[in-house]
Length: 226
Image 1 (cartoon, rainbow, N blue to C red):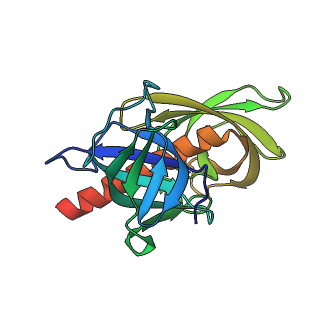
Image 2 (image 1 turned 180 degrees about the horizontal axis):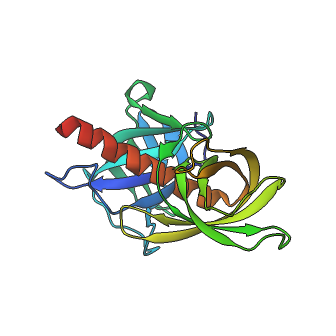
């Protein structure tokens, strides 16, 4: 499910704070697994790139991408701080039965309207700006403005504007394969195009997965409060 060197994403849970609403995000590498414990290197703030300071008892919501491409989350806390030559945090591993399987990153999509700039690979058509219909870690569907068509094109280059819940903005660049152009039967509805991320940095893919994960958490929270 996971391997040494995998990235864990952590959100500190303050006392009386709703873990879903927490905004500060950290990432850490898994450096060892012991009985009932994960050993991780000191977590780094994803925005400031500074190492966080945590004490024993600090609680986290943790998530990681498993080998099967699914996102798993669990609640954890700092059990011990290792202060040897290699500083590390020991956080509890609640066990697989307590992991929550969130999604399969390449297949499960969420509906989302993100700004996208579409460019030709070889300057075969003028760039245009549109929005996504849905998105996942494996690809997206976009709305095609009137007068713009991707019929006959195998690949395009896309720039995606991604707004995360911590108010940070990231511009994701990917070379995409044109999977299918969907023509609308209604004049009032635009055509759409399904795209697969073909060349994308793994760090950028992780940001998209994080965005999907955050949106799913918000949806679950809203459903719970109805």
